[in-house]
Length: 413
Image 1 (tube, rainbow, N blue to C red):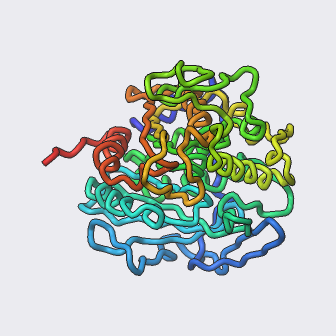
Image 2 (cartoon, helix red, strand yellow):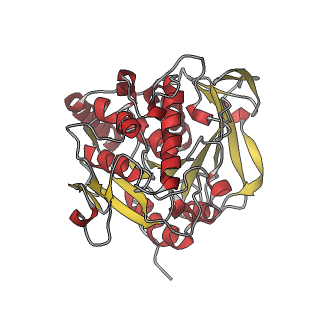
């Protein structure tokens, strides 16, 4: 009854704010094994299951060979394709009888690595969440189209030579998240998402662009979403006329044009790389190259120009005001630290590399009816390095997730 009432309220709210229908699963196919038939051309790749699952999806699961859950049993894996891109899911069995909630984790970068493959402390963090009864669902994608210095585009890969939009590509993770919610998490339990960098694009787009607010009960968005708020601003380095030129990294509601306008020690974040920071320029060059790749252009964004086609890849243009019924937490990394970036690509902090600006503008565009509201949090270090900080994971992120999923915090010893 409670679930039905909640969905009814979501329908009414969606009508008022612009309805995005929930995704059908016709773009997702379960595979019998982690084996795919791949067609490749210059800059694109298209995946299909070598052998589609012929029976119920549960007959096509396989145990992991090494990783075990908190219950001492191997994790379960399942291969799939989503909009012609291959990937895998893995999840743990219940510790005691029944799950208390579900959390889906989407990796950053091109999405080809599980969290602990990039940040070892995430392995312990996963087990801590499992001990609270959560089913922790990890998504991993195949390499996809071949790229230059990044090696492969993963879930960002185009499936044909034609250019696409970020909105098109984010349908893939949205399909997977919807399937996971419907099949792996009890209907009467909360379901949340966690993503950093490209993972925050994937998980937030499921709500902002693909209508999954009725199925998602909590979101932790970190290290972004990068680029997606306004790709044109990242290309040109200048915010749109209606946008603040800069925002304070400590409080994205505060507009600024220089550091002294922000709290002591905080910097003003812009949609362009920090001046006199060669590493930041390289990071932003990589983001611009991704925009060119997705749209099928050659050195347009990379040369500081923007085209009209970027509008459909822009949250500002297509989802500039999003109302949700769940809590949302943000984490950005400010000031460079000693911990490495788990994405392996971006080597500066989020403020220097435009990401604090895009994350902050996204944060300000969200309103929520949930009493827990939304929070803005900063962590010192390179992009996404909070994942490699055991103390921050245990003392801060752990509590955020339990609070967001309405689970009691365990008593401290």
